[in-house]
Image 1 (cartoon, helix red, strand yellow):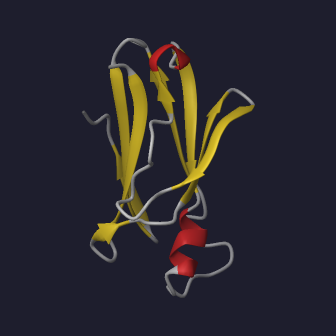
Image 2: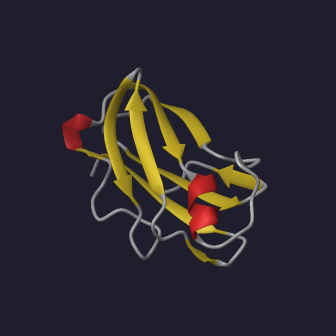
Image 3: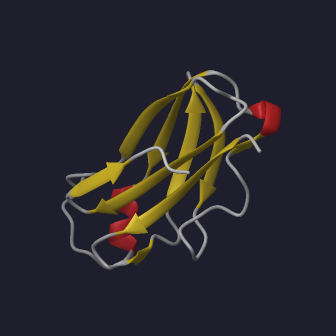
Length: 113
């Protein structure tokens, strides 16, 4: 099944990043604005089926807000206020999973399965 999903892991606390705000954009258009569930995932794909098209996308994760809400003392703005992941879809009939592993001072991402 084609589609786009994400999963956010809080590597500082060693748990899913529940309650993190994020947005999916294509160009200047915001396609989805949502918040992660208790498992650090979304209740449904960001895009599914024919809604996933070839081209460039941007995921914006509000990590500064998330860590402040967790009681982590951060400067304002924090070192990582918003993590931006720009990526491209070249096979829209495939599944794309873009996980984020994040702490207040570092992050990593990859194309998952």
